[in-house]
Amino acid sequence: MIITKYTLDNIAGKNVVTPDNALLNLPEKVLQFGTGVLLRGLPDYFIDKANRQGSFNGRVVVVKSTSKGDLSDFHAQDALYTICIRGIENGEPVEQNILSSAISRVMSAESEWDGILDVARDPNVQVVISNTTEVGIVLVNESIQQNPPASFPAKLLAVLYARYEALGEHEHADLVVIATELIPDNGAKLAEIVNKLIGYNRLEPAFIAWFDEHVRFCNSLVDRIVPGTPDSAALSKIQDELGYEDNLLIMAEPYRLWAIEGDAHVSRLLSLEDADHGVIVKEDIEIYRELKVRLLNGSHTLASGIAYLSGIQTVSDAMSDEKLKSYITNVMHTEIIPAIPYDIKGNEAVDFAKAVLDRFANPYIEHLWINITFQYTMKVKIRVIPVLLKYYQLFNKVPSHIALGFAAYLRFMRITEKKDGKHYGNANGKAYLVTDDRAEYFYDKSVLADKDYVNAVLRDIELWGTDLSALKGFVQAVEENYRYISEYGMIETSV
Image (cartoon, rainbow, N blue to C red):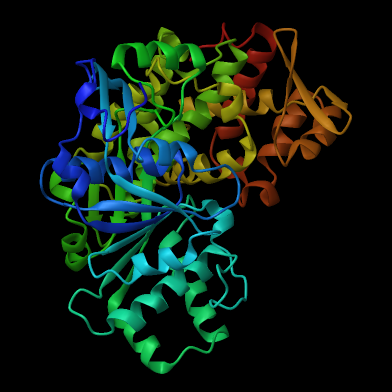
């Protein structure tokens, strides 16, 4: 049995939260650009939850902007889909299945553009959400009169112009545009491009005045691992338990955060914060970006070389290894939290670190350490160096865990072979691919002796934006850890 609105009453499984029929008839209040699993597993999850609690009372019209893929599964299932939440929260296992009715319909920009503009004209619509990837937030000078425009910002401007023409100064003309693309200042960058397109299209001053008064662009930060559809064996097992087929089923971890940069007016239009603590609307959301980049991403980066060189394949496996789990815990609490380059009050950082440990331990998500080493150098520079410099500013001594993580990074980046334009390292007698824009740089350094190699890299101002040898004792600490790793192996090196 495939799940549809007509088969809801026939669900045999008892371990799934299903929607009431009334939720299927709520008005459409959100226009969403993107059909991906992150949007369905995070913003749409919050909307569905708020609908069940009676606080948002609106559904989502999803726009499929590209020609890739098809919409047959959405049409066949009346856009219903299951979110299977698996993982650990507050140290306890979580297993929950939610049949989401957040989405009312999915429309193709390519073939239903006029209908999408009709949605824009609806005064019930209050929110536009986008996740078109960082490639989508680009300026393409084009007419918004195309059917449809090619780029996402031009599509958005066409939507806004249609709303302006239809509603003008209607009391419900206000619209909040929330970008969730994984780039800094995503909403501000989208607004900047839309403003340039207004000029390119020579739109009238009355529209510009309306645009400035009625449209709010918000930066936002999304954080939830949503792996999507599980493999066929796992999917079959889940569907047997649920009692129905679902070709749109997705997996998600328990942790969820949608931090939106906005004021009280934005908060009021969204009406989502009371539904779940994971929705936060504040005028400054930089703290959440810092916590994520430093504690989650930073500890990932520092531990990735240590874990991979130790022969540990996945993040969850690392949390079953007492030495590595202790390293991750200690580097977060003793070196990263005290030196986050942002004013963080109270226990926010400690609470976030606790959630990070739960997320790392999630056995349902296979996060490979080798994948985390992708663009390793860039990640160290962005995620670790600011913390390292702040730590020295505050304490003027070597952060021993960061020094070890740096040594493991340098050992991982020690290129031993170049073949067919690709660079390889070697650990425990096994070659591995180094996927880093700086791989050729490290290949050039492979002729150096170990001590000279470590010194040359740490002193490279062009690479790091600073001379790390100026930090008292840091080079010596990294050298000593590197030597120990080279002589005795990562497993024997104290973490």
